[in-house]
Length: 313
Image 1 (cartoon, rainbow, N blue to C red):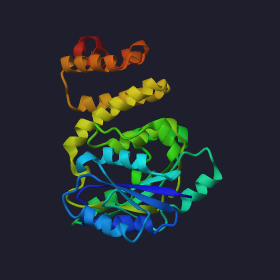
Image 2 (image 1 turned 135 degrees about the vertical axis):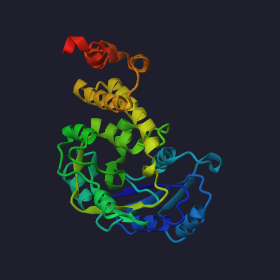
Image 3 (image 1 turned 180 degrees about the horizontal axis):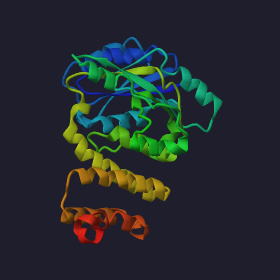
Image 4 (image 1 turned 60 degrees about the vertical axis):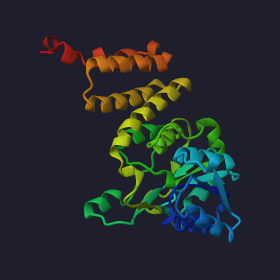
């Protein structure tokens, strides 16, 4: 099994050496593709020093050494990757020795499998509470999920989630699902994983023990709640649009619309705001107009009990 490990790097001097060496330690890793995303600390110097002792390290930059974000950096690394399998690692995370043990066996056993997902643990670089440690200790699904059912379960979270650090895919899958959405500042991982679950065959690997560790520190982007609110909606819009473009079954589009409007309902938007948004959604997805979902999710239908309470007494 020959793997390219993708690592975007931005001001990760305190963590990047541990991340890179954890990948290089594994025999399956034939190259570590790093994109220095305009770092202003010592990240690049550390990478260059590591590169001197291991030719598997490949370092790339955006034009003019600019900072373009995680999605653009991962996309550049994916374009540069040369191996038939792809795995991901954030610059402040690290792999464990068992990272690819099950993956290699699973891919060898069934050539139709597109990807294998595994559990990841947590490593705190800051103080933490018992509750926080319990909540973050293992990111995984609670049981193996049939590939055709995975999309729905990832949306509702009833059987847990998996992280991109625990995912290994065939590079050829990119021709179907494409690259990361660069306009998403956060939730780009979730968007990409859900796109993959829509059309690819993903199976469980090691879901009871971690194969990688997520580093938790004061500057982690997943602490930015407000950013997630904004970009979660963009993520659902992107997935809905892609689903209509690729003729995904209506039941899955229904799930996406349901979750999109669930979160919008929590924001308590006015009817006028919702009508304007609905028109925008219809213009963006003309096929929605000819679907029964156009009636189901029309704001007047969804808010009928509020608009016409006398009819529902």
